[in-house]
Length: 309
Ligand SMILES: Nc1ncnc2c1ncn2[C@@H]1O[C@H](COP(=O)(O)OP(=O)(O)OP(=O)(O)O)[C@@H](O)[C@H]1O
Image (cartoon, rainbow, N blue to C red):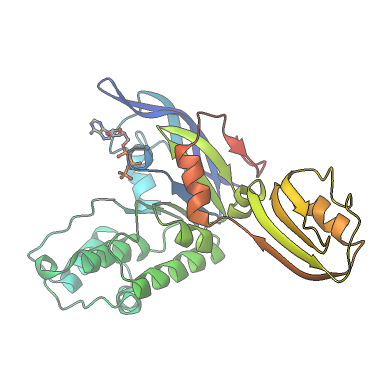
């Protein structure tokens, strides 16, 4: 599959402070890539480097095979970008502002702009300066999506959006990917990333600490399990199970409870020898999973998809 965004050892140092430290990452055509990390992790720095708004200290990045510095005009023509701090000219109304941006892009069919604005619930007759933060963000989204770019690079795109507009945005992202186009978006909202991203990269302190599908990130986590059996099972039935943490039978030998780390496959195979009347396996909340990565020790990137450079 074609690489649309390639980062190689991308590094940015601000004065003596580290913004990004040797980030290597590929994003593929038609992929929705969620870029997560706590405040100050380096998400906006990465995105600004992709658009040549700042320059790397070392390493390099390409978008659609284009160098952001030397081929910036072509790159911007083919990319839709929403800045984390999107600002727009307050004197105009929304319609004239979007028409103006469309003209700068060499023309965008007006019905396409109207359709995006309507879907997001954006009133185009409003003066920009009177818009709420969420409605201003919708203007930012319309301008990023309106020319149906090959790649969308979005910094905190759902910031300030109400749940309805958030859902519309997620639909727009899914449609973009179905169309074979690519979305690279940073986010703090785990659930929206789970809903829409094919893969997720997590950065902390300017370094990639995990990259995988959400399902892949979940696969290594610990699950709480409770199983009840139709009849008593042998006391030793579940001793020595791989990944078992404090897993044990109660005194009646009809209820098994405890925790399993990683794949539950061995447990399921062991259970299949008995009559199971109920089974509950509780996965950690996505929030908890990501917090573990946000707060964890320095580690080599966890790569589960096999698509990491
Ligand atoms: N212009 C700048 N001058 C100095 N340091 C900066 C500058 N921009 C970013 N940094 C520093 O680089 C690091 C990464 O910041 P960045 O804005 O990329 O993080 P982020 O992941 O986007 O955070 P947030 O989620 O808060 O937006 C932080 O330590 C930040 O203080």
